Image (cartoon, rainbow, N blue to C red; front, side, top):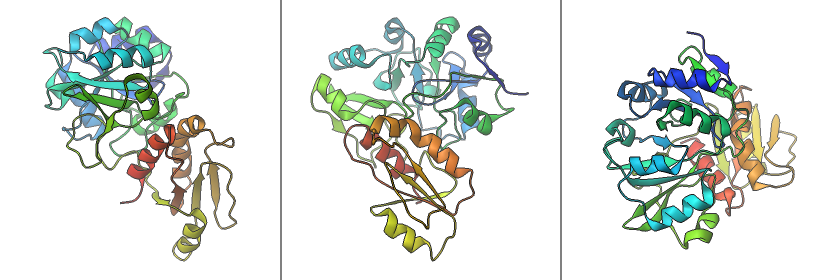
Length: 320
């Protein structure tokens, strides 16, 4: 089975309706999709990704009427967040209805739902006629895909089609917000900043990194290149230390950086834009991971706005 890159929504809809898995574009990252009514296709997502069975999937919808069928309760804060950020890079966790297969919820009594901000995928969900479940289209713990080509590298000849929607505009997975007895809590930082959420509903909690898994995206090791990644407070000092062990050193810098002992330096944003840095992060990791470097060195970005989400990804991607 050769994997086809296509922009044909109807063709992809038919594949999903027939119980196939395909890759879909979103504004965050590419997803590996199945319709929510086909248990075999849902289980195959876990097989393809080598994903732990306790890691839930996110359900994607194209209109709010689909949400009402998936959940049994919608908190008032969730309504406000949906009005502010849907379609967009925000997932919310709700008590699930009987329509949601236990494979999707990984045995939990909740389901994570979002409305992606990508015209092709919204049209696809509408054409399919049912919501679709889709985690990121990468093997478990590997770098998330922000281009169709990334997905092809991972899953060529394992899925029939990739709906090619170009480069992902946000470049980080969705922020995931749940409601613990109506108290909003961020389970995963992502494409909507904590500050933006708090501007709509007031103060929110952030789940601790060692918390029990209550939503997708809570595993500690994730988003990782095969090349060793070191997260440091001083890139120049780290280069000097690593030079005694390694010859081929790559650097990821938020803004301009120079060092004559680094083999390659990738700058996430020449203008120090956190939004641009987020969009470029995974592409940069993919690029460096192809260069057969001994080590990649980087440091945390400013911890406000999307910088906090980027730092979360670097923390999970680093060598452990």
